[in-house]
Length: 352
Image 1: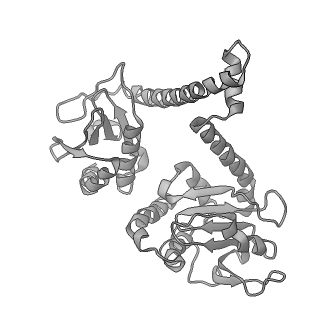
Image 2 (image 1 turned 90 degrees about the vertical axis):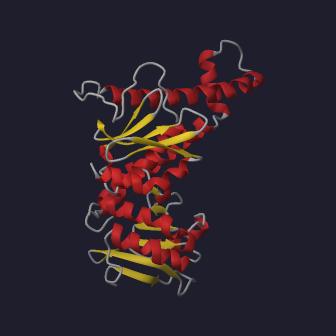
């Protein structure tokens, strides 16, 4: 099984068991141990690889335990501290990791609540665990771009030097991304002053900056939407040379001006993709938007429709296809209702 498939298997398990995870032990048994064993590939039943309740005296602290210590090639490499599912992770939770980091040979520390995984090292000062993680993974909102970085920590791929070489860039890259996200959500005074100064010829008084704040925020949102739409249009136009003809049984093309891909359509597409990606490679699932609906296709092929998202109206519908590729529309009240049609979507995907 591919590394990503193992990870997605754990992701799918979360929704099934999360309501039963009322204790830290339940979280460790249901999510953390499978993550260590199945995803990272370490044998949780072999104490030469995974040591549960690892103890190392740290100065005045005697008998304190960290939940797991992971060995690779006989060397202590990763310390793991687990908390209950749903509990917000803070530096307070990492206090034992901080202490253990200085008295063991481990260079990687992991703090997790079963779905959020925060990886730390000692990039800022030798033998002292950083206060900020170099890699953060949220299995309930998985970022595909981080999967290759996580794979470097797996047993088969583990190379400490390679991990630490990329850790610094990841750490600061992630922090910069957060700053950018915050700027787009709510641009601060410095950003408003910078951008307003480029377009406003008068004096930037406090009143002017106050007036520019919503203007800057709106302009940023418009720019982001335009970039997304441009990328989607470019992707769709690349298939215009296809020799596939349209017919009434499959998705018809309705390209041209006026097509706007909404956030709901993008999220709906991602939900459908998440449902069927265990049965089809993610790269095979694509979106093609039109004026009247957003189509989800297999292999970018009009003759392989998975579903249609009819979201350009007050009442949203998902259009599903039978074996003859006849479409039936089903009303949905929220995007989460798409999960109710998992069996049909998986069945349709399986035919391709």
